[in-house]
Image 1: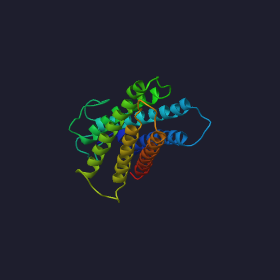
Image 2: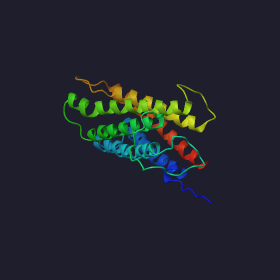
Image 3: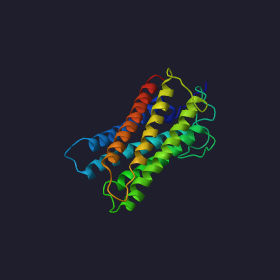
Image 4: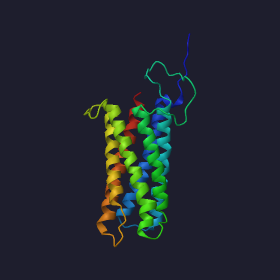
Length: 229
């Protein structure tokens, strides 16, 4: 009798924990956005710390997802969970939509690590802030949007689909919406040379709140879906 050992990254519990880590990161971004929108006793740098702390779970979960995609079988056979060959930390599967989505997402989270860390104590001067905060944020947002659409294509098996009865579709769709709002928030947050209109920060934080909410919903749905398998 042949017994196969299913690696931990192919077990439903792995997806549950990954969803939980994503949810923690999204929750901290929601908290940071809310603190930026309503009066509170925290200083700006303390709110910045909340965003930076939120970027860490995002990067952790993105790595977990990339690790899973890097070691996924070429043909998904639920009866075969064995590992063939060496385990890949990052991997190189440029023709695989799932891997491309996760690697661009991972790169985007690293850009957000830089963006949120630099925002804790911004450098003086509008150009310095655009270079160290706005630019990494936009780069991260663009990478997120690419990642989100690739994941949506993978679920759709094409450029677009509408499958409201499919939980995986809702996960990909919620994350894609989160990516769109993150990008609009990042673009709007450009620091102008002169006085900054008050609506810029408010609008950017509202879009950031909506984006983080999309990611949070996707993460919770991932946790729920993993319980069904």
